[in-house]
Each structure stands twice: as C-alpha cells, then as structure tokens.
Image (cartoon, rainbow, N blue to C red; front, side, top):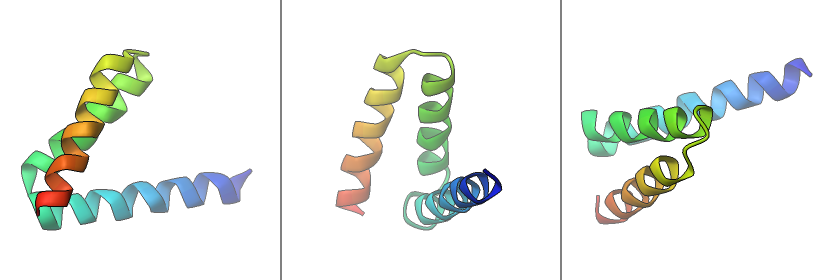
Length: 60
C-alpha cells in the first residue's frame, strides 16, 4: 500500500517538474486543473486541461 502511494507521489513530482521545466507556470496550472477536475468529479475540466497540457507539451 505504501509503495503505491510512494510511486504515485513520485510520478506527480516528476510530472510537475517536467511541466514546470517546459511550460513554466502554465504547465503547473494545467496540472492543478487536472487534479481539481478529477477530485471534484468534473470530467470536462479534467479532460480539457489534459488535452491542452498534452498539446502544449507536444509543441514545447
């Protein structure tokens, strides 16, 4: 159980560092919106932010 939580935390940290390196504050904001959308069960917000983040990561 703790391994899964540790792996999840490390993946989140790596994703945030990658987004911050490539996209700066905008990448972190999009990651935050994905998290908020998932936690609040608003699929439209989460999917929209994920698609935008993916498109921006491809361009960066």
